Structures are given as C-alpha cells and as structure tokens.
Image (cartoon, rainbow, N blue to C red; front, side):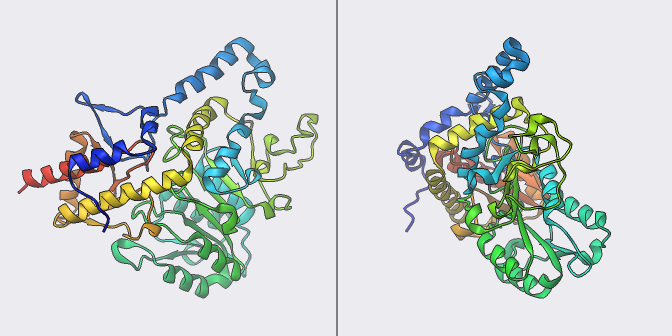
Length: 426
C-alpha cells in the first residue's frame, strides 16, 4: 500500500516533513489572484531561482567597472566562465566533467553533433528515430539527411508507437534496430518522449545500436535535471539538452552537450570555432584548428556570460539539493498525483504516461475522456484558476510535479480543480 490520502491535512504533513521543502523558497512562484499559482509546467519552463538576479547583476557590475579586464580580474573571470558550470552539469547528467559543455542552444548543438556523428555512406545512409518526435529533432534529422544527398523517404526511419497511449516499447525499438541496423548510421532518440512522458532505456538502446555498428545520440531536453542519468556509463556517443526546463536557467537559456570520452581525441569532422581550439595555444591566433580535448572542442564562440549566469545560479541549487534526493521526491510526488487522478478522476482522465516509475519522470500526460474539445476546455479552466500545466497537440495536457518547488498540496489542489471543473460540467 502506498499510504496516500486525498486530504489537505495529509498533504500538508508530507510537505512539512519534506527534507527539500526549503528549496521552494529559493524560487519565484508566479501569483494568481492574490495566491501562488500551482505551477506544473517545469517540463516546459522552470521557475526563476531567486539567486539569478544577483548572479546577473554581479556580471553587469564587473562589466561596468572593469570592462574588458573582467575577462581576467572579475569576481568570476569571464575567460573561464563556461568551466564554472561544468562539474555541476556533469553531476546532473552522470558524466565526467570533460565530457560536457554548456554552449549554444539545443537545436544548434544537435546539428553540431551530427556534423561529427552522422557520417552517412551509401551502405549506411539512414537515421533511426521515433515517429512523432519533437519538431526540433524531426526537422534537424530530415535536413541532415537531405544535406548529405540522401532521401528522407527511405533514409529517415521512424518507429511507430505500439504501446498504450501512443508509447513506444523497447521490443519495438530492438526489432527496428535488428531490421534496419545494417543501414543505420545514427540512432537518435529522446530520454523522455515529450508528449507521453515515457522514459526510454538509454543503456539498452546504446547496447543494441552499437552491436549493429550504429552511433547513438540522445535528446535529453525533458530528462536533464529530471531523471537519474548516467550518460558516461550508458556509452552513448553524444547527447544534447536544453537547460530552461527542469534546470531552470531561463527562457532560451544556454544548452548542454555531452561527448563520450572515447571521442575526446578523435579526428572527426566538425564545424570549428575559436573557442573550441586548444586553450593552451588559443591566443597564439594560429591558422590551424587544434581542438581542445573533450566536449569543449565542439565550442564555436566565447561563452555568453549574461546567459550562463542564470544556469550557474540554478546548478548551485541542484548541487545543494542533490539529484538522488530530488529523484526520490519526484517519484513520490508523481506517484501521488497519479494515485489522486486514478482514484478520483478515473471517469474523466486517461493517464498516457506509463504507470511504472522506471518509465517516467516528473511528468504525467493526460487526455480527457470526452475528447479534444473537452480537453481544451479543461486546460483553459485550469489556467484561469491558477493551475499551470501545458497543452500539446492534438489532445494532451501535461502536468509536471517538479521536486524543487512543487508540493504534495499542489498535487491535491490540481486534482481538486479538475474535480470542480467536472462538477461544473455535470
């Protein structure tokens, strides 16, 4: 038995006993009609850490007082600024520090990684992906196939959902790799399917892909800061992720990339830039590009200080909270929201996300049984009553109880609001 209760007293008692409860106070919770919103949209845009303003203002002050000398004499010298987020980022995604870098945005990083790790040949021209992928991935992969002179109709292989609610089973992934692997140059899958909230088995995908001679990369946009990732141990060739969702670094924030250490010194094609040059000789301004070993060697430009400052502030929160404790709370919060929906709203909502905790993170995707129009009506009602989730076409509402700032009382409040909507439409 899970011991859950659908009462405010029980939810408040869980929140009072929560060892991570103080971290909620480190975030700005948007107001609604004199109260705090119930914010379940950290899977789309994380809330602002209170430390962000001071972090940015510190760099603004150094800029105003030191100008170019802040590269060397600032409180956090800008020359090395991207390195200040390296260790914490590596800890969040389960990598070695030299395997990760904060740079660009997710879509840019995906293209940069494919320059190096999608090297199609006549015998192996294909990319294997999921059908219904997030548009960034679909557009990038199709454009890369075309750029190399191949035909997406035959060389962009999309695996169709075969499980409940539009999920994709590991059996189907393994079967697709077994069938097409001899033609596949790259397998690119998400850590979490954005619409359904399904978690994929990264270790098994890498194992199956490498057995067939495929390179394997992941889009971890919805997984970084959410799942207990072990990127180095998976053996994935590369991964990319954004930092504005669970990592709370702000809209359009600097993204992250991972390159496994076996490629650290590899002579692979890449788009080169000054900041990717070996830093020991970078300022000799030589004409020949010598990449810095590790993920840093894929950088193009010097780091955007004002954009990295919020990420640094947010990662400080993660370091103090610790991913193991965050994951433990996330699983219990999500389980509570799942239980509340199934026990109180089973006639109203279908949960698309797998019930198995190993196959989901801090997200439940739901569909209204009455259909898309009713789903849109419910979403609008929730929004107007201060319950903030998000809508994904054609008919999914996503609710994400994020452990840094969501509470058990928030989960109960969201379900109470859905129950009130049902009553008003009875």
